[in-house]
Length: 226
Ligand code: FE
Image (cartoon, rainbow, N blue to C red):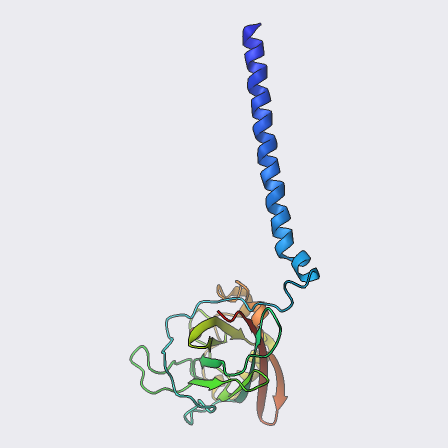
């Protein structure tokens, strides 16, 4: 009899613990929901924060401030049109420094791995509309990565965003049919099987349009100022 009562009380205690655990879980999922659609509905979150992605091993700080970053290297012309906005107000951020770097048509980065030069690297400041423009070429591929352009955004001396920009695979297929890309073997990695792209890369997909003999690629980056 005593033992039964004891068992019952233990079960009751366990039940109580389970209820506490369920309560905590329910509270957690409420909090998660509150940070998502509810916050958007309440006007607390109005712009999309562009996902952070690794800077990778080939970043070099303090590159040249210039619009044309090709240093005469070959490739399909690409105008990169970047817009920086505040993720909380959606307003353009003027005077942000946009810092880009990418592989040339042969898949080579300047200034690293024993390579010389500063090609395909540069910094531009955003204008009153939050826009910074670069004249470059469509990036080549390198082992293990899908085609991408690295980007950092600095505001007031602080890095407010580090990301990577991507291209639609079908467009890359078309561009790579032409010289100088066509002399290289087929690339190893497409967006869907790139480990960095899979972690939020679809939110940093460039919108690309044909323009003359090349392309214009645009991206809007939502950042937090501090
Ligand atoms: Fe890279």
